[in-house]
Length: 338
Image (cartoon, rainbow, N blue to C red; front, side, top):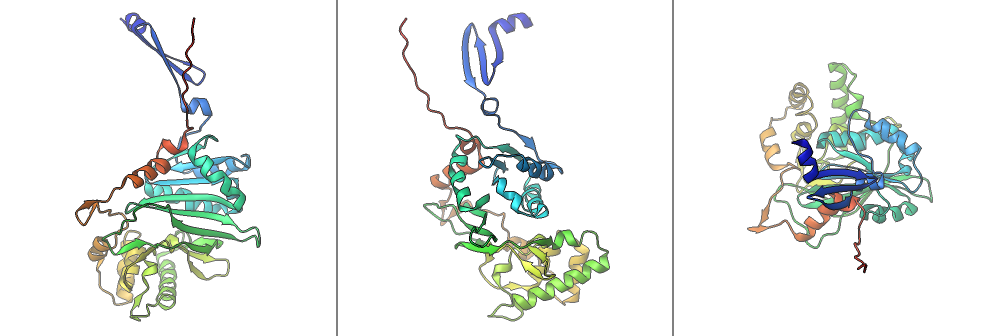
């Protein structure tokens, strides 16, 4: 029986070419990964170390990609300018919260490679694309050749129509630029501490927030730019001071102090969350905050109209699927007379 099936249908590989034979007729096509040497792995705990070591052996014109359905990182050898712990937290830890994703080398004929390789000459070396609210936010890290400093820059991928979220939290609609700060994220710093020590650090952090980011319209609130105030967006720098490092999102109104404690601690440690609310004599409003300040809820319609534009679909296909990472082919047919 198997011999009969093999005579009717068979599959074979000739180098990168996959050959299928059906009823004596041969069909062949390229297996992209075999043809162009792309490397694919599912991410695991050793991926950051592996990726970092791979960059050490990469050529200056190599570009690599890590992605999920709504998150894409593209990076070059210039990432070796970054502290390893920052690279791990920024790329890998971010990916773990977003699901398992792939890691591979970009083909030099691919759309994404051609789009980004020229930017390396301008000092750019790491790019991040995230889809939320049917926007695509674009963050890139670059080195300023004039002073040697590293900066993190944020903007939008241009779209013909920008969609406004109906929720109270939005992407900042302007380009932001901030200096890269060496240090350790508060979330990492408190991992090895006792509960008493954790409370002391969180208390100092909250005092820093409530003083530094006090809202002008209400001294009992904090500014809306601190809406993404989770523990990994605060760095304890080499100067020993706290630094908030992610201004890509902001709330459309001033925030309750309780919101800051909620966003920082509710899913991290419920016990710490309740303890800090009690310490600052604030009400537990986590249900209200989760319903009105979610960065993950995406409205499908606006004013009764579908807001998923063709332009957005095109950009998503480019940045989050194989359409951007595989080579572009131009098939030509030549008539051969025998």
